Image (tube, rainbow, N blue to C red; front, side, top):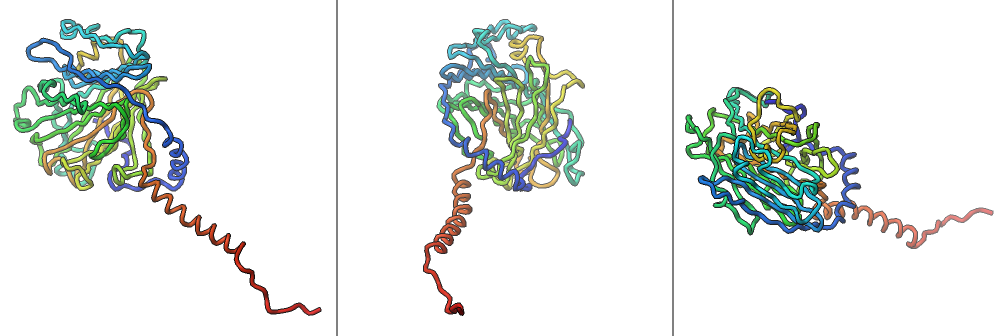
Length: 405
């Protein structure tokens, strides 16, 4: 597993420089005047009439002149297709017989094909585990590596049982098909998906800003018994598109930490196209359900790379949509460090990300920060103005000395 070349700011790291603060202040003002976009969002489990049921979750976000399609599946490794069209009438077509065959190309399509303006996929391929019992600080690699869990070899719940159209959410819950060590006897790995019809923030940290063009994924490892006394966990994430270039990894900084205290960094993955896709996350995970500073873990991200060392598990929906003409890239995430809180505290780990298409949401200054700035900057200004007016308009004093002439 590859480590990050420059670790991101974590919980309690240093704040941005004054120059960055000033530039962000100037750039944030017009962004706060942007209007709020809404979409009509539909979430459904695509019926398959199979036994056992095959999980295929379709999110369709309809706007005035466009439709965004998110197709989530646990066929093979957990994965999601992102497809943007320039019509409000595009639709998803699934040929189950072809999709479940050894050659699934053409088994999943978004029609009409000529309306597609952007398409890509994100695949969650492996769960890593490292033993850091004898390591005093975070190093690269982060410790002894245990054999990774292939998420393509997990069994998953029936997604229909967790579908909630009121909150536009659903949860994939799984464990290894062959759990010879019994590590997941009382544990599971979950992927909770939620869509949105308008802009806003969740109630719990890291409170990522979402819009109607996005959906949120929360990954949680709960109750699984680690193979070491102090284990760090990591996640391998692959991206698939028809572009020959890999998405670019970027860091964005903000001076506003009201929503995630002392976290000033936002990491994002961007596809290079006119109508692009993106993934955003804060470099923080949590080791308790009640998320707070005491349970915050650092999140280290590797550079994006071509996975040439081994073959990634294949996703049937990705092969069905893209066929063989696609380019795969990957990056790794590692949660926690050798010291401080960790998964071992309560056998709990959660991390969140936002996936979307179009323009990534931008954090603007919150009302609290704007109020503090107004008081901090406004009070001295008023005092200077008042002092100047007093000097100009106040009573004039004359000297008692008279010139000799």
